[in-house]
Length: 387
Image (cartoon, rainbow, N blue to C red; front, side, top):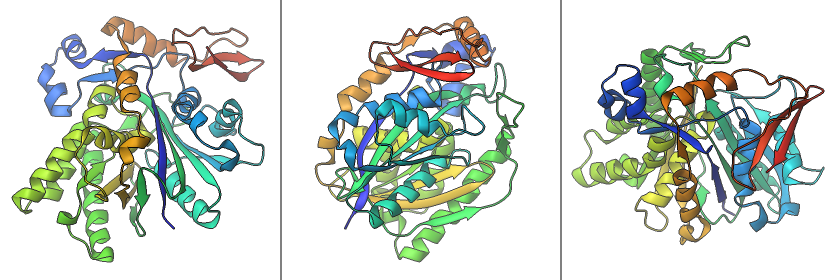
């Protein structure tokens, strides 16, 4: 029995700031952002979008196409949690009108949270093959205005249905994990923005990739040339590019070109949206599936990384005619529908979103009809509405 990804839903907010505009506002050479970081645009979340609403919107992309009664597990990985106690997944489950019997919880380990959820869902479905599981990664990356990490911000969510005999990607047995207590990135309880040692974080990321990728090959008796594509957690595109360069060095030209071309395809959406923390790796997967060139049963390697730090490498095999289970036009429209904001408008939106709205003050959303949004708190209870 194969278990893997059967559906993918994606959402990003309806605003973006252009990296050329941001570079000029910060007195930087635009190529530092466009080439040095690898970003062209960055999605911007206003006060009405959070990890919950984005997770709902991503899952709504496919929820009406599946058997809701079959869903037995709902997991959300996020480092943009909305409550210190209550799981974000409970709000999502309520909006999706899933059965009370569905087991649901939230996972936190920086950007590794969604991968942890997928591993749990995979094992759950193996034990309960007549059930399916929804796994969501949903985050808003915030480092602060005019900071070193500002250009690596973003917002969005990816939702996946994990089930037996999947239509998109069958997960292979085996994985290689590596963890260590490292302070490369963290967000204290009293801070609305993350703290990061950028150069150190890149070094750790690349070290964890080399360790897990090498160990995976040893465990499974495979070689770099066996992979049609390698994809990565992309806090910014250049970081994954560096990892991919490590993977393809000393490889034959055909292998190196294939992996380089498919990396470019996998980074296309991230270049336009920015960092979405837990969902970044899976936005890379979606971008590869929709923009790359994969033959049937192609082997795809996935490197997941969460600062602090946890790394894992695993693999999946694309299913024949996987394209039929994707919504390519809808995903490209999701990105294209966004409205450009000026740097001053972005700064105002960013600053306002850091503050909790006044209790019992209802928020209004400028999203399109049908999307969910955070409508404020009523007697300190978060309210979510569909426009």
